[in-house]
Each structure stands twice: as C-alpha cells, then as structure tokens.
Length: 54
Image (cartoon, rainbow, N blue to C red):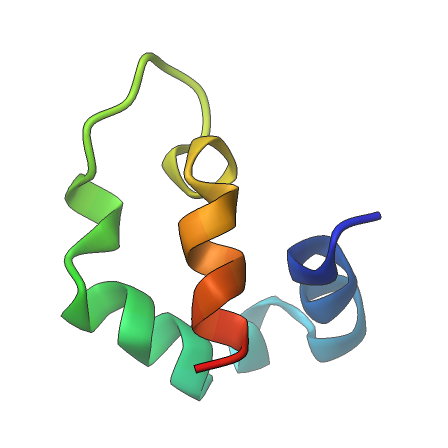
C-alpha cells in the first residue's frame, strides 16, 4: 500500500477531499494533468505523494 492509499484508507473520502492535501492538489491543478487514462492521481502518484510531505 502506498502512502497515498494509506492516507485515503485512514482518512475517509469526505475528509480526504476537504484535507490540506486535496487543497494542494486542486491548487496545483493536478486534476488537469495529462494522462493516458484511468486515475490521474494514481498515474501521477509520485507528484501527489510529494505533496504529502510538503
């Protein structure tokens, strides 16, 4: 399990969406990152996990 997966599992969806992490993701416009299909956040998990430590 990645750090991001563990964070989501322990935080819950609603709390996670309102969390500082997802505020940073939205501010970085990460949901608009280019991707090849599937989950954008998973495809860019290295960048998202870096936000966990920011």
